[in-house]
Image (cartoon, rainbow over all chains, first blue to last red; front, side, top):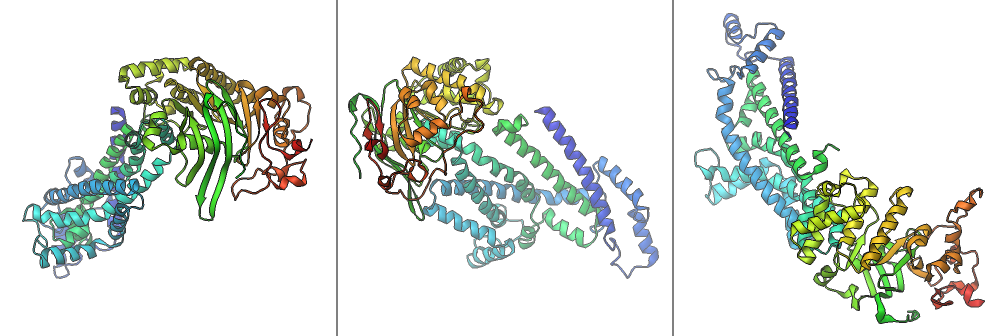
Length: 307
Length: 331
């Protein structure tokens, strides 16, 4: 258990290092630089600014400087938001993204699994069709359409909730969480339903039914574990994606999360900010993958024993 | 519907099948895989049901356990101690299944729950049906695992199925089925998936424990060697119908039905090692499709008569034997 986690963490660290190197050089391969748009400034000033951010140094030296900063936990200064370090910017945006992501994944997991269960247990009943309809809607309609529609109805027409922003407490949360959760509810409920139906057909479930222990114990004791494994495998990476913020959601609802910084940074060639957010996202992905593997190992002895 | 010959001693039997049929509904209508089978099994007896794949033998067992797939349906009667298993409501069936009626499945690799310890899987039935405390049920499970010669049973009970070989898993299945001391054990080719070298061991173990607990066995197989080893009586099934049945010795020495004779001829014999090729039964076994009015074996039969266009009734043929063949009716 502990060697397993240690090994996975070490692998994750290597992955992050590779990610940092790749992003660093790809960013610099793209044409333009952080200050190439500001044509009005004189060449001397431009040179001064670039020197201040060490952009005049050879790329390899810049890379060494960056990695050295990383090892001290310093993601460098932002080139776009002067006077702010990337650490500051991420620290200011991450809590918003985390809050929305946390509630969205909670809602999506609970509602998705419940709908999937209802669909699989009463196959072709009305709950199944209702869940299926929500599923199709959730998967087919993109966030940038369903988001504004909900704003128009709940905020503008009914006036129940704010259109956007982040200063009305839980009321600011409802719509973004709902819109972010919807496609995941859809996907998780479909996944739960199909893997539950598949699990019910397993030979060992037939053995359990032959024991005469009744449908409830067959379901919870013999069908559920196998049915939830694919759902958990999906939930891990999905958690990382939701928690690190959806760019679309933060744009539609004008939220100060890190997703918007990411777009801004990419458009403005804010090298350190792009790198910082990429690494945060990569870190979350690695951590959630390790957590997923731990849960899978806890549920499935074959994973635990590495067969 | 042809009325099958009534069997004697109807009440003395543990299990009496009367015109048991199994149908599967599908888009083009329905397929009959078991057709009006009538059989009797006395307490403590071992009855073998022999037939090729697709002859409906497994579905016959599933129908008794209420385990048919969603589109399957059984008709007729299956009286277990006078109670018709086919018309039993699910809750009443659950009181019998895993208690006085248990089953061993064909594929030991997939028939155990991969997420649960062996001991817990065994104990589950005892805890549920006999309200035995968990610790005691686990102790009994360990005793039973030891009984089927699983080495170091106490530790094995804490292991998971994937830590065992196929042969060991089938022993676990046998232990699980016999732990509740059932009156009737349904065995669906329990040795087919096993290595030939351990088939005999597993068989002997099964019949040994069954005879101790007085358990009757309905044993489905395609292997006549298995029949010879443990069965008292044999019924030969083809195309979902009984072609012939009788005591095991006579069936294995002098089968009367052309299919039963063919089946026996295709069984390899150790004293016949010089025979260059095994004989085969020409053609392929019929499976699926609507039931024909003719004898299902007629298309492959070497001794076919014009009368074979109609299904011969199952008639008494000598002491304790029955046969469904026009050929013998003629002579």
